[in-house]
Amino acid sequence: MTRRFLIFAFLTLPLIAADITGKWTFQVDLGGASGSPTFTFQQKGEELTGTYAGQLGEAKLKGTVKGDKVEFQFETSAGTVVYKGTVASASTMKGTADYGGQAQGTWTAKKD
Image (cartoon, rainbow, N blue to C red; front, side):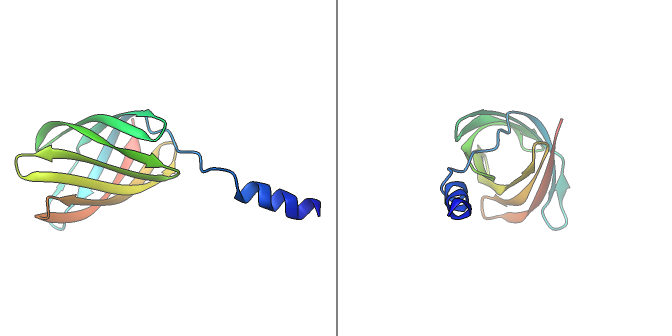
């Protein structure tokens, strides 16, 4: 009985969002084109804001962190750029990027 209760209690705990606040360096591979933009994130609960700095200039971003899932976007002159991924640890993430439907690829990131 006690074991079942502990398993039930564990499974009903809400997912605690990872906190990715800080500066991150990304390695982005768009199938032939690559880059190393930096992102600075501010997180409050599940809400994510911050800035992008890279080959496309600088832009403000917004998004969410839900459990270990992260998603954010920013606007460029070419359209909306969307990043989706997973927080692997307190200092690493990985995922996919869609550059306004014009290019798609993968990314990894490390916290500075």
